[in-house]
Each structure stands twice: as C-alpha cells, then as structure tokens.
Image 1 (cartoon, rainbow, N blue to C red):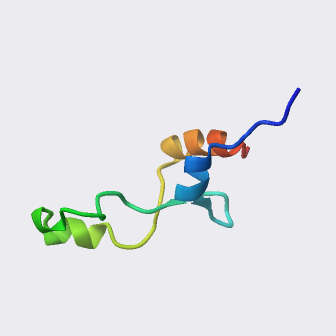
Image 2: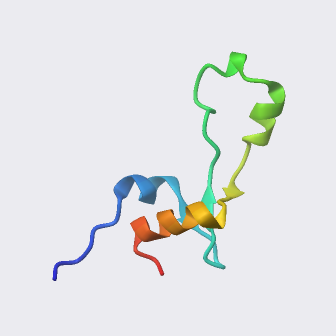
Length: 65
C-alpha cells in the first residue's frame, strides 16, 4: 500500500504542541478589520489550543495518532 499524503493546507495552518494538542491561530484577522469590534480583534490575537473534538479531525489529516 502506498504512503499516505498529509493535507498540505493543514500542515501550513496548524502545529502540534509538545503534549500532542493542536495549536491554531484564530481566523478573521486579514482584512476588513475596521468593521470588527476591538474585543473580537483582541481575542483573536496570538495562538490558541483547539478543542479536542475538532483536533481529532486535524490529527487524522496529519496522520498522527
């Protein structure tokens, strides 16, 4: 059976922490920022840990157990 390819979009957008959790960066911070509230922009700053339910899907795309 051939090797499985990882999803290259996932490879660029997410990374795994040392404990195996998925680290992500919040969306909606590229353009049209004047319509977004200051609170939303502040909360979307920096990286966050993804919820475990969603992280299972990302780990499957990365072929991580």
